[in-house]
Length: 163
Length: 163
DNA sequence: ATTGGAATGTCAACAATACTGACGTAAAAT
DNA sequence: ATTTTACGTCAGTATTGTTGACATTCCAAT
Image: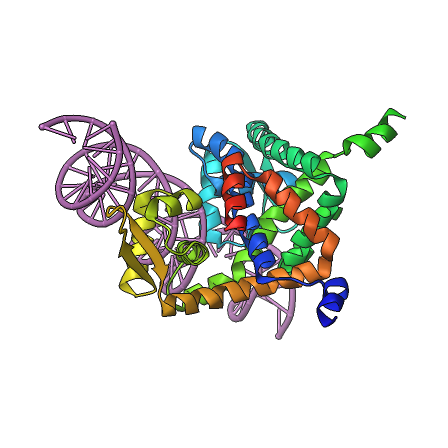
């Protein structure tokens, strides 16, 4: 009886069910990155470049610090990636007018073009997964993802939604 | 009208919704690995060690080739990790009796202990996310994850469920 | 006006994780 | 007897991350 009550009210979770969730995340993340990775390979870029392109596109004019806090890496690590993207003219810098220490980041036309290619590939798989799973599943998917984030990232995630 | 029909039947997905899914995966994966990473750091191990421990625990007695196909890395990459785990006596080797070329992999007591530590931390976050999102969300979460995997990994994932 | 601190960039060194390619050994399969 | 398979290993390289140190630029407060 106690068991039945748990099942109904408390969300009864076996180790096995949790393990499935863990392995699901592991395997799904591989699928999630597979298509962009193939495109990036052709241009000799990596996932770090993809992430930078994605968020510069998402938040045009962002400064470096803001991008750092979204990406969760060190400035040295980001800088290497950013430098190549700027050299290759996928990203352009604009020095802040109000605060001239700040560098505002934008995608160039070629940058937008590559970002589009990458996001199209990734969205395609996401869309297909959503279609297979159905609308209710999608809502649940997002809820669990959001609950899995660190609180700070949850805030970042929500801010991106709004802007 | 056409729009309404799309919304109901076809699962109407805006670019914005897909982007949320993409960013959700990105941020959630960070949360997903954060707790184990902290533990691994203390022992000077990395995620690769965690993954090896996880799947050796999940499929005790697995041979190297099978583990390779689950993890999706090269044997050279896995070998480096496996060698340290064996040196540190977290993993033990047993030469196959039927086919003596095969090395069967098992966790030692210390291996089990570390794996337990890691999976407890990771499960704790997963359980908490499940609890916050609720049972329906969890079902949807798993469906979308599964649909996002490459077909081969989907098979691998399901095989692990059964065993 | 000088000073303190923040934002940024850069150099160097290092570590983890991945890759390719080549080679060796042992055992199984044909 | 030969080929294939399973596994290990050596060498070299790339990507992405880390610390630490140091320079520059510039805002803001004293």
